[in-house]
Amino acid sequence: MNRAFIFDVFGTCVDWRNSVARDVAAALPEIDAYAFADAWRGEYQPAMQRIRSGGRGYVKLDPLHRENLDRVLERFGVDVPDRDALNRAWERLDPWPDVVPGLTALRDKGLVATCSNGSIALMSRLARWSGLPWDAILGADIAQDYKPKARVYLASVEALGLKAAAVTMVAAHNDDLVAARAAGLSTAFVARPTEHGVGQQTDLEPSEDWDIVASDFQDLARRA
Image (cartoon, rainbow, N blue to C red; front, side):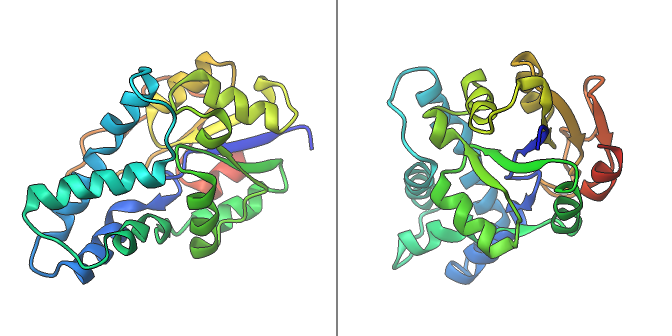
């Protein structure tokens, strides 16, 4: 196939907040599971930024999540018997309802692959959990860096053997698409207005004239 669609995963394809909160509630019933999930996710960008800025060599997201978990457990003043088991909550994220049928339909139009900051190990296990029908798992691990660095998008394009213009980056986050467009990829925006809960303030609308703006993945497959 001479066309491909690569996807942000956390938030765009899967509902990380409700899924992580579910596992937190089971492990730590005495705390606010959503507050904990938000705090854990809040450590995500700072942890990657230390690597993007050159302050630390590349570290896969799995151990970064584990380090972040340690910080948040300390902040909340709680602990769990098996921190590694709770860290695997990120491998058990449920897809948004439109995602699996939408990806399945989109595979008639081109290759579908991740372009995620998640490791290949994490994305593989998550795909099994969620039933995500990827043709390939790409992103940070093959680039040895984190989005929104251009090399992450371009390493995924190169791995697929295509030109950047033949690859569409799909995301629910405008800043992801800004970086992908700057790297020469085409872009598609699908809003996830409850990714951060009912009071979400960000990424409710497209910030630019993206190549495709779709209401969900099934609409994306129709428009592609």
